[in-house]
Image 1 (cartoon, rainbow, N blue to C red):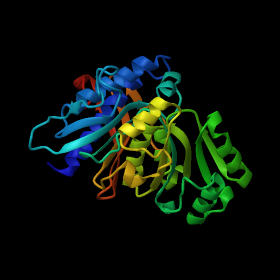
Image 2 (image 1 turned 90 degrees about the vertical axis):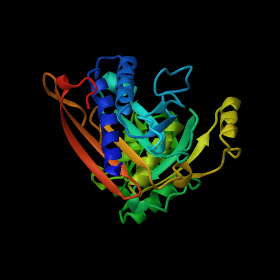
Image 3 (image 1 turned 120 degrees about the vertical axis):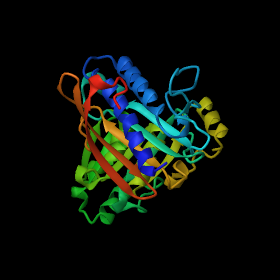
Image 4 (image 1 turned 60 degrees about the horizontal axis):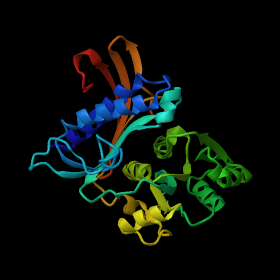
Length: 323
């Protein structure tokens, strides 16, 4: 089995999710859009030449009938590699329901045991691209990190763009960035797309800071690792149940800084994403005429540093799997 086969297989997985859910754009039904993405992704996984186990997915078995944590995916032949799979078939369910930008279908994959099994709770994150690798410190102040990233990128602070989710809990980040004179780009939902954007110079995004979902944080870390960037995180527990979840996964110190190699332990990790609605990095699904659609995707591998952008034209009437 060639690594190119795995990479292209992952793109077909995210394409299937994107194509299945994109018809729900702007129709106000986020549940139907999400279910369509899950259905499409699971079918496409059935053709992947791997023995995969979902470690980050749609939830536990009792709450998620498909792509649940612990589910085995792929062809599953004993000669095939065992892989950890992290999926978000539709990151940005509210976005697609409203027809807004930044909804994407994403998959991260690495050798068995390589992806942090993050519980469904909040995680504080800071991420940068390759140009600022090694200068971020989640324990330093917002202003210190912004200044250090600007210096690493040889930019004036007024030229730096910080991506922040528009939430009350992030008011200090927004205030600090504006006081320094940095540019601030706010987004409503879809923090995987936001982290992904800061890994590429042509998006104009230099730094992402904020607190969002922990599972999405691990998937984002896989993307950042493939791009040679850097990310740090801390789990944020709001009650005793969440504290117990952390202890169950072996993290007794909630102040522990999770470095990118803690979030993604292997260098042989893959990441794939397909735009559903337009993002900073990827164009969304476009229907050109009946039963024809175009998708824009990216697939990356950390071990080789290879990043492929793929524009695919689909004749949907020829396959109900969209692959």
